[in-house]
Image (cartoon, rainbow, N blue to C red; front, side):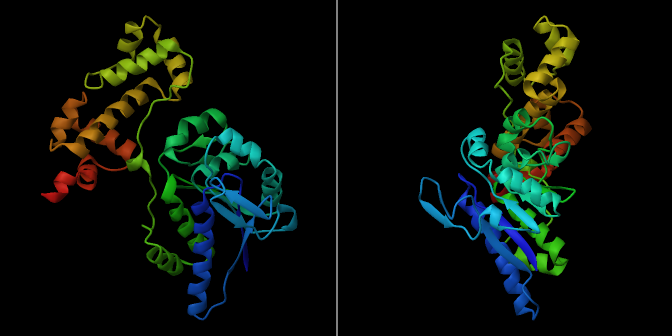
Length: 326
């Protein structure tokens, strides 16, 4: 029997508590229907016996308090909502318990923005992690010792698991089912919950919003310039000269302020413009490429795929309704 402890933090997203409970309970049902024994003992663990969520619209009655759980096999940290600094403070009593259980052999998995509470334990220091792409800049600022991997749906390292944004946590739940049971059961679970099994990237869903919560006004002006001139060929030397800053100093300040190199930032802005064009126009690949300042087809395709996880054609076919209709 595998003991699964689903945390019920203050400010938890109710679906991210209910969905993993539903998943592991459903797998028990699948196993029993196949003449096997149920595998998962699923318990909701909260700092209080009753946790009210989303402005008291929902009330969750927990099965156990942390101190009542002597040992568990898997801890699931659901997505949180609201201000992350405040959420971590409200739920800090979970942190020593999570660390203690991990040191005793438990595995730990966070769903979406639950990665913030997970990272606060220090267990992710020096390790890869995923969270919702919209919170990536905030996460990097709060947890610089954790290697955030923007595009990944799932990360796994030394019994520590994280998932990407929103519904992608279903992919992690299916992944864990396969780990604890077998491929056939995971496929059954994926079909039952209509989950695209083995999806490993959230890159195609990401919208790039440059990090602007910094105080370097010259770099903010450089960001504005890049975003206004994305259709031009831009170079680091050109930008540094335009703002009368030495290249080395410009690159150092830009990286510190935005968490991106200058080249990465330029590429991300250009590819975001290309994505919008593919979504809303009937332009061909070459036209879009030229519109965003590229003349090398191979370079454009390579960078587009690196950032979105799809080729330009795949992206256009997937997200352009005009192309789908005709």
